[in-house]
Length: 103
Image (cartoon, rainbow, N blue to C red; front, side):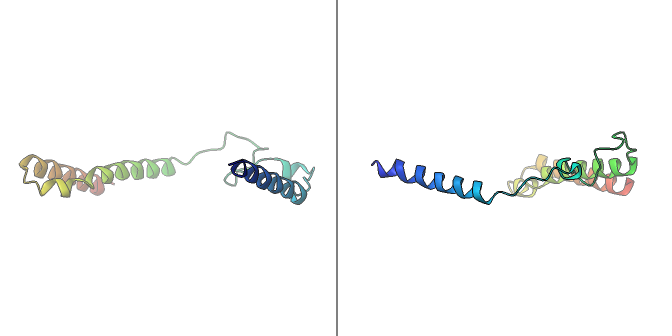
């Protein structure tokens, strides 16, 4: 019973010690110490212009992604023979078609 507690402590201590031995020396250069995120340089102007086209494409993707998540269970529900489900499925498909044509 005591081995269940001793072995994990020994193993974690050994792994911690190996990690301390193998860690890399940190560089003191400014470029290395600054964060790098998505190719943006944080040392310059943070108020960079944003492409409205990119925003509209991402918004359209989000809308169609949510609609597809709503469509997935509908064909299974249609097999129950409900007229209402058939109507809802047809209505959602027509809305998607109109949205795709408008886009």
